[in-house]
Length: 489
Image (cartoon, rainbow, N blue to C red; front, side, top):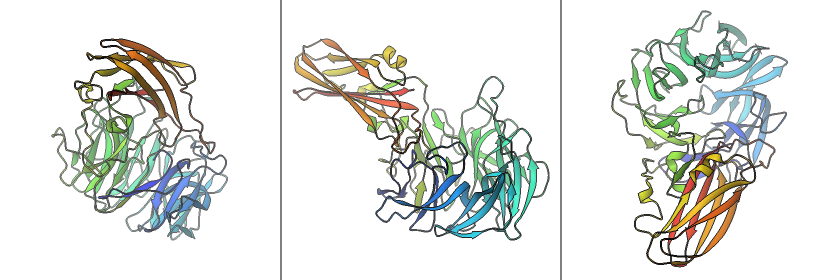
């Protein structure tokens, strides 16, 4: 979650943190019931996320947030054939990768043989004897080769070469072939985001084919095979102009069903933003309310604005709706097993309501503090909000209004500036007192803010996609108001 790792026993309220807030992590996998393996930092520069080899740590969670270094030169991490096992792709020489097996949080085996190029994703075969690999050849900027590695024999074989297309995330090996998402890293025609497709191929050399059942215009984002191997959860668009939704592909019948019908949610499409529940009855996705890209003001405290930040949602998939079907109700993750969840830096995961039901809130101004008959009100200058930039000396005007029929002796204002990235704990406070606000009077207060990007305590470069500005007003007479602005930078 924003670079650090937490877990929650789903169905309960307790959240346990496994690393410090300034730990820069990329992935986390369970290593038995009492330990977790965490991929974090890089061997050369801590906190870089540019594809360099990283370091693998073991977190015990025994009342300590300390981590133990297990291995370095790690290129990718994937689930092993069994729950307590983890597969590692490791740099073994110039332009070469190898595969190792972790058991109970320790390197248990280093497999013979090597792979030419850099492994960027890996997934075991259903029988656990081979591994499908996404490989980036030397000199290439894309993972445009699909390999199969035999764990017993230590032999590597190229299955497909994708030319100008790269594989996104890890291939998914099923009883009906290997599925993967791939596409060009160049912008789509018309300047849109790069388009990716879902492919299927056999574990033998040959050209991949478009995955049957999804449709020729489908734009894939990420894919994950179900625990029983019979279904594939896919996040994507039916066509380039349609919204992102979650779909389930039945691998036996080829049926492709929509599980969500999304009109106003922004669903993340990264390979790490999609996961099945252990029983295969639900899928976890990361989503938030659709953003306009412009500053937005809410009549509520920042802690109540669940829909404006990325959250973890559970989507039931036992009976998927057909395409164009009704919107399925989504609830926050609530299942009967422990879930380790990790969201990369730049996402904001609020945990307060993680197991308490729907996150939908009515954030209309009429229901916020300072309304509903209260005499005190605040207004943020929208023009000033739109002009704010990352850096010092940014000016914001706040209008303080007494809409009642009695005066206030004073109004105390507190403006709190925080990051939209929870891995950046720095908060800046600004205060001002308005003396003598008469009935019907409005006074303008100008704040000069420092909206510079915060510095990480470990030298990493944190991602801060937005700043959160919360303005609170209180009076000695007991009146209060609050406004929160979400400002993209």
